[in-house]
Amino acid sequence: VDPTPILGDVRNDSKDSTVASQKVTNSKVDPRVLHTRNFGKRRLQTLLQWEGVVESVEVSTFECRLVPIVDGRPDQTRIEFTKFSFDDLSDDDDHGLVAPGSVFYWTIGRARNAAGTATNVSLVRFRRLPPLTKTHSERAEREAEAMLQALGESDGPEPSRT
Amino acid sequence: VATPELSGVAVVGAGTFNPAILHPSWLAEKGLIPIDIAKHAMEQNAAQPIIVSPQLTVFVADWLTVQVTQGQAVFSTVDQGRELDVRDVARGVFELLPETPIDALGINSDTHFQAQSEGAWHAFGDQFLPKDFWEPIFEDGDYKQRADGKRVGMRSMTVEVSRTETPLQGWIRVEIAPSLRIGPYGIFIGINGHFVLPRHNDIRGNGGDAARVLMEQWEGARETESRLVAKLLEAV
Image (cartoon, each protein chain N blue to C red):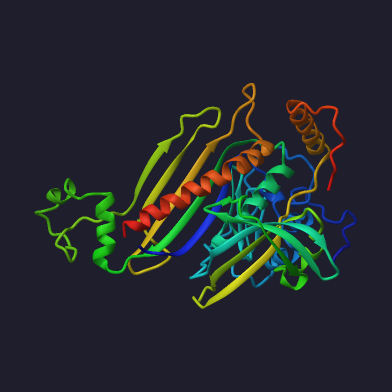
């Protein structure tokens, strides 16, 4: 019968140990071979792309304004308005991001899977950014204040927030 | 004019990173990627097993590929239509790690396309790297000949232009080479838009700087890349 170790894992060199070693030793982790992922013929080529901002939200739809993105730049001179269903969203996880003022992207493109089979796709997904930190918020307020002062409106009304 | 067969985009940060933090679950928890694609990255039978370690993190989450070493963080996609999503993931990570030292930022694209014939493939290489100097050197040896009688072909060529403006120094590098992803007669164009992050009182740039530079430079970099690729495709 094996004796029950009263100290559990008695080794001090296990990977969970917090004992400082007496000397620097080589890593005890075995090397792993990294294989390059083969994407085959996978691609998604943009045919048309817009950046949108939600204007209003209904039960299962949202209305928005869109500007086309041409050669990487949004063309602010060509504003369009349309309505999307929540069913149009490419990720179910995005439902919680639909709110007035939220930014999203709409891409119409031609996709191929790894084998090369082509499909036409319409991708609607919301921009994902980390929540605004206090530091960022304060910096944005300072920048806004500076801009207002530059415009000579330092005593103007409190800007609305979304 | 040829059309691209494959094209992708990558955002690269060069600095000092902690790869272990960039787990798919962390990205999902911070709201940078949907939970479903984080799960996709962690599937046991995924085409590429996830690696998250202090030295290296590598995973593929649907359209997003993340590769982080202690010196470099790469966020890329082979789906050009997801370029804005990749930019936002990189921006989000940099903003969430504002104290991470980052020295430079790359906004990169790669494009693969196919020439119509072997002759057109070689002609493309000859246009950018004329063989007048090289052909006579190999005239007398026992070397294989191309269909047009020449012996020398282009394996890889990189040109570079450096920006003069301060404080954002850097360069654009354009690499042309045979494509490793499509064939026969595939051509690869890799464009590296490199931006050196400004130092403050000799202190290295950080994640916050990288996020800001990424957003400030994105549109211009992508526009330049589109223009370059269109110009090169005209030459096929």
